[in-house]
Length: 343
Image (tube, rainbow, N blue to C red; front, side, top):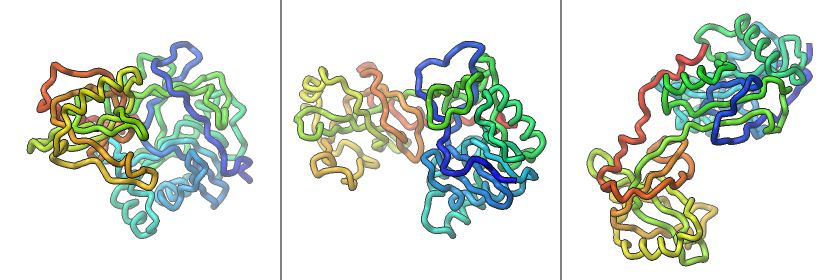
């Protein structure tokens, strides 16, 4: 018995869209907020591969161990690694696993064990590739594989899937903003390695009202490049939580003039913007503190570790909101049991 597909193997990717596609040709799944992972097993040999083709086994030994306990001696699974924390999943705890010290990884694997949520079967227990089969058929085989080999409430779980958009909407209502979004896949397509034509992702965007506590100039120009965002904590301290650079070019000159009139220290009274990075210049690391007078509403996909994980999108200015109304309460993760969606 030999697994025909070997790492590195490019996983199928998703195209970001604004609206959920509708039609009988689509299957819907939850969008999990974790690390994409392909699990290869060929007898005693087990390998975990990231979306970019890098090995992951050393960072998640408990997932490799769980894969080795399955009675199937060959398979290729496509899924997502997540780390449960309370009733949700912690991306911060996940990031802590990517560490050079094996002793630290081993300790964390016991303190905050990860889960593998599986959504596709690319090779069966005989090692035969299934990538040429349409998703509809692969899903049936995956469900049969899960019933036969996955342990109930174990470290490897089956991701739910439905052909009914109403069911996908129920997931969002059930767990709210703790779910990263919805993945839509073409049921009639084969597994398209490294391709985005058969899969779409629709993020569960959230919005927050933030104080503009400072700004940075565009590199090499005398106009604003990004707004630095702040939120107040319970003690009344304004913490830097991220930025937005989605400012229309036609509006930058007038906005810069408006911002420059409000320049005054300290800008942020709590956590402040970081210093230079290896990619920044002295100019790009500089920031101008502002009086807490301006409020903007931004959309974001995830808030973790006291910051927006990625850049945000400027939705609108909020002259109707007082700066002190922009508190951390807006971005606190609501209690929702994401594991309830798993089988």
